[in-house]
Length: 278
View: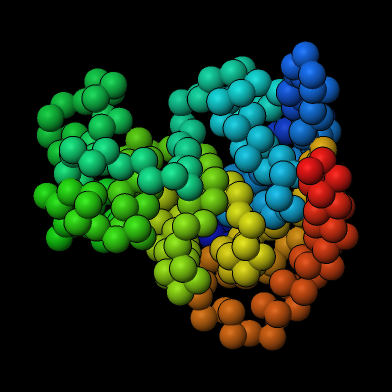
């Protein structure tokens, strides 16, 4: 595993490129089609931590789904490591969702190891990967515990470990801490930053929390009300070796204030639109 270096020129290399990506959901007999997303043009740099914020219903999760290959864009294309993403999750991409995806009948070790069943690995390699993932996520002492015995934050760590064990080069996080309290979210954010530094992966995070985006990301994309488009790209300027203590800095408050200036009008549009349809 490698640690991202802010001065490493390779970190400016394109890793994922979205070109004029849109997503429209077909209408039903009594409902019109919904233009949910785009067009979106974006390049993710190799090894960066990129976060997206936007008003409710703006297409953030839709953007992540087309980026993951879970659903295909209506138009445009997505290029990952030089190859188009064509409607399936490609090798080298891992996804973590907000929902608790632990299997209650499996212990922590078996939950984490689940994805390895499809890989042609020796038993020694499987055990080593599980041990590495347990150590990396701080779950070694809970290897034999079941999800019901864990806190919400620890269960989410199990889900992250299950993704990391596949050694993805691009990790997509869809509001993974949305159900946690503020203090736990900050601490879990520190865990994700540590894992990011150790894995060297590119991370794409969807979040509704401006402070979470401001703390975690190298760059932040602000999305408009539906159909979601990128209306601002913000460089945070943080060093890779950061943690939750940056929330105490004056620059942190300035950064979240800028995000809110970009987002406030779009959030009002989204609110007005949702009220109009009720």
